[in-house]
Length: 488
Image (cartoon, rainbow, N blue to C red; front, top):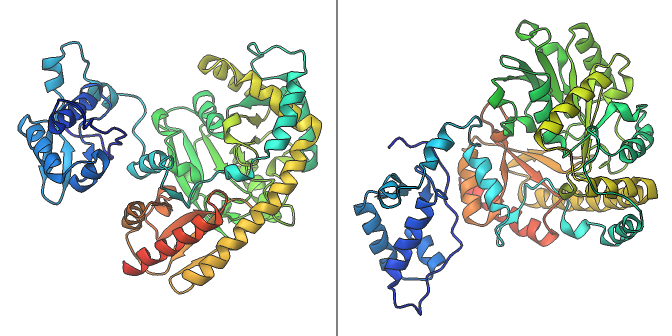
């Protein structure tokens, strides 16, 4: 059978040592069952025999006997030095005739599977022993539980409905957001705002609503969007544009690849993900001017704007947009909680209406409860109270990581000094296979984000985040990571 699936399976089961059924039969039955149900697919690897013995709490000889029988059935292939791979699940069709071939369905789906490294990151982030040095989220320790309790009390006292909302989202939230965004020199009306479930959904709606097959999306090199498949299924092509210390370089855009009415530029100008670069005020004006002249719309992803340490960053590109050239994205996923699933798109009414119509066709609106809660966060002024406190904590976390880098990485890497946001872009001095660094770190329960998942080419970079891990975890993890890099 042709192998297309990849990645290592996850196991959270142990055999019952008090059962009359032998441990070997229990393990074989468990492995068969996971494959039969389509939980594990052809091409996926089982953990090593040593790891399986640890997971199942049995002798390694028991594992060897179990895998030998599965190999004899033609279900797995155990090759010395290459591990054990699932090679066949057609036996399940013989013994359970009603079971569909889920692998075949998956292979013919519209969306391609994610990069194996990104799949691993998504899976292992939630394993208890893992130290997360790349996670772009606020630490649970920083969540303002006391303020949240106050907001929830306010919402519970309101006489409101939690039914479906209008296509653009809760009017009270859109109106409150327009008022709040004036501090960024943004003057917009509620009719120009669409509430979405975060910036990722905003990008999905844009790809479905105003882009099509053969469209071109210009992105920074490197860019967060490169780590996603958000544009792939539509046949949209991404082209990279170089950056310098001031941000994306519009004069480096190859205008011969632009297709009128079918091209758009995506940028994260403030505390860029993954490099941490903030686009200068002059560059913002220059980029907007170039895009206007070439009739190229801009998607401005501004989710990190409020996470500055000392001086506020330049105003958004959208604040100087007088011709409706910019679609502006924001959310509270980085500044408050990704679990709220609340973000927004701001743009011309015609575009916002179109995006809202497509959103209604896909999920019938973001959570009404979350929208009422966010309305209270803004209206009460407690969101601003939280942000001011969070900035101070984020700055302390950043400086702590920078001290650790000075101690353990000064002779093997260089890095940026952030002025806000979540990330440090670590560049290893010598050329080493960054994917191997990732896997060696994972074996030591250290989870990092290798730089090449954000790039169109291989690089020697790692995106580190100081926003999530505790100080102790940061130190332990970075010591281990520096030792791994030195050995390589």
